[in-house]
Image (cartoon, rainbow, N blue to C red; front, top):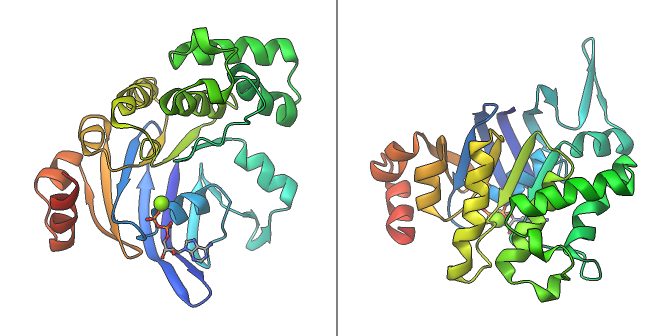
Length: 250
Ligand code: ADP
Ligand code: MG
């Protein structure tokens, strides 16, 4: 579903990604861990067309991100084509970024209606099902300010799912939450994983990575230091940098 080959990304003179190689299979739950500033968010932003890589190749669902191949030639995608590809990728951020003037239901209905031209009735029916699935069937009429952080994050997940993505990206989805609200959000993500969603999850929740993750990648300073089965990487790390990081977060 995702393949990175030697992906480099710089901001001016600052090299953030220094040759990332990795692969995410369909239906895989792929956890990305690493210290602050190691380039995790930047990598997700590249996958989601929010940043262009400087060199290397990044594929999503077999397609080179940002380009179309025709024979031996590569053409940069037009904005409309980028928008089309982005529809298939759902993203959930640390900050939930719900529309504050819309109810939970309207937040979830918005993109399918605006972007896909879906009818109100169809969007509403799916939104209600999704709110139910994230445990908020009774909160459809609430505005974000009338929801806890954990509930807002679950609405944000429902909103991303409303576009029926084939890949979900989570960037520290529970980092901004009070500890007692984290579990409900992780439970929703666990359910998604059980339903076979392909997910890349940047997280400091090592319990989630161990129990739900199919693979874990430890990134530091723009490179993949160590990757593999969560039990191996988390309980028996081979590299000093991984050991040092885990000793701080576990
Ligand atoms: P992480 O998510 O692992 O904490 P980030 O991908 O957010 O790391 O950032 C990696 C590095 O890239 C940091 O040093 C950060 O300051 C830098 N960076 C991120 N975005 C930008 C930007 N838009 N312009 C300049 N530097 C950036
Ligand atoms: Mg980040």
